[in-house]
Image (cartoon, rainbow, N blue to C red; front, side):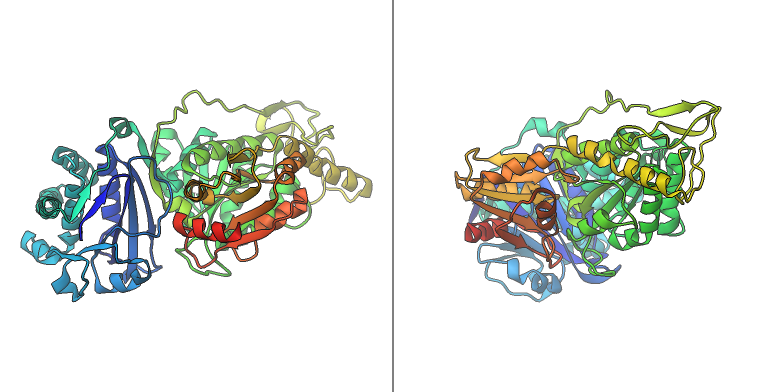
Length: 566
């Protein structure tokens, strides 16, 4: 049972809620990054405060690792149930490092380590997770000073616990060195000193930082997993950057507060999940009628109703696309990686402001909860255009224009009255039932779609330029499909990723016309984006690779399914 890892390795830690699995993830990813390793981490967890079986996967690589793997190289379980929970992904190649006696498990490919007995010696069974973390860090030959420095930062608010945790990590480190010296596990992944300067963030933080770059100065939300992470991230930065953070009494209040913020001249957003957004739909229609911008982040999870609250899905594209009664324009973006989240979240605010429409940012649980290291992005030079008009006494809020966009004033800035009404209105904003004006106003609003289409973001093509097979994806499947494409080694296959889902430029049809076979990849049961491509571009998807069990695609799984489809 000797294993040698030279390019990348997947380490999975599992236990029940309350055993500090998230603490280990936070500790290990940051220490390994500080030590010069590329890291990726994602979690799967049950919707309960205590008990169940939760796990975190940490991939470490010589090259950038940015997707979930179904292969477990090293498993450290902290409960017997953890092993049972992951049995379908444990192979004969998996090395299990576990407290065999206390967990009462028996595997031939296991290394017996008395995690719980050591933790009791230190003072409490709870330290078993830190002992396990120390064991892993020793396998990577991590410098102890880096470990101590990061631990002091993580436990800074609980200084009385630092010494005990350092003792726990040292005891685990001793065990890890023994395992390493025995030759059972040998990790030869090269460190890169440049990675130390990378930032390590998750999807929630990337969306929040991108929103701030877009001028977001206020966020309104009613907490709902997994969208709450963006609210918490903005709250963390609120004092430093002057962001108003309001936990509203419900979702209806949240979206109306955000619309009110834009009406007053702020740049506001809401963050939620599908079930929460379902309550906001009337607000979306209000935004469409009064042509007041709003940015809405939806972190998707499986439905209907509360579905699987802590799992992942791409099931809310139709919800964002068709939400709100009546007909009015909107834009929908879906970042595929953290760099795109920084960029698209900023663009969402600019688009909302320029076109005076509701704009959606679609992510999912897998995306917002996954961490990896990226190069630092300098946002200091980003400048957002100020499109607010100083009004005159004869100001017409909805004056008819060729492109449908009227100068947007705000109350108190100028001499004019800024009148908005959720009923149909004339150019001044006064309520009207004049049917001719109704037609003109409706056409005015819808005419913005032409400009939105013309300026739609280009999709990204990766792979052979002279492709015969084209694989379509959106959102968080981007990085997984990139890895799968690399695994395929098929020179006649390419992938296309759409960062903007709606509206689409009709010229994008050219990407599909040269393909002999078009395959789509989505985390829903009906192929919602495939259907939209048919509607928007008349693109015929020949085969759909769909997954809707609440878990993300792994690179290995997607590679095999694409092989069969091709």
